[in-house]
Image (cartoon, rainbow, N blue to C red; front, side, top):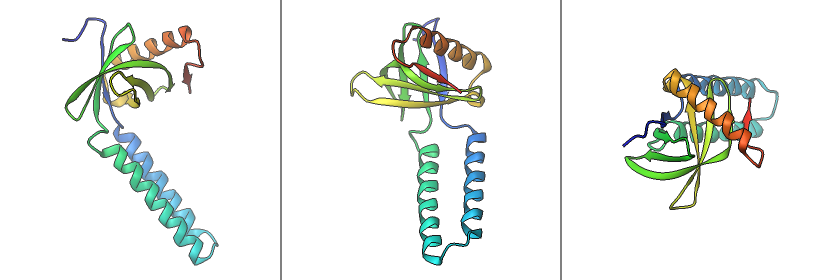
Length: 150
């Protein structure tokens, strides 16, 4: 059951983020190929670029990349990944911008920290606005550095 004060959010990378990642990869490829470095360094750089690009694409499109996060006003939350609901507690740390934010939660059973990417384009404008207000209020009451606004 979802409480009245809950914010239901879709977690994952938006389409625009995947397009930007592809464009940055193409620019990096063009810069490597147009550099005046030797063949060994160029091949090494291309290998590193391919590994990093493949790793990021895997995290952006894997089964754990899409999730649902339900935040409550008291800081408690529920995270659903791979069809399993897990109880979490919202941490005060995170990154926030107009287009996306990283909400850090702490799993209650496994004691793991999970960084959830919440894109504005995947959620309703009301839900994303309420998330920003909640994070701004959490920053005001945090003893540590709290949320970083970009």
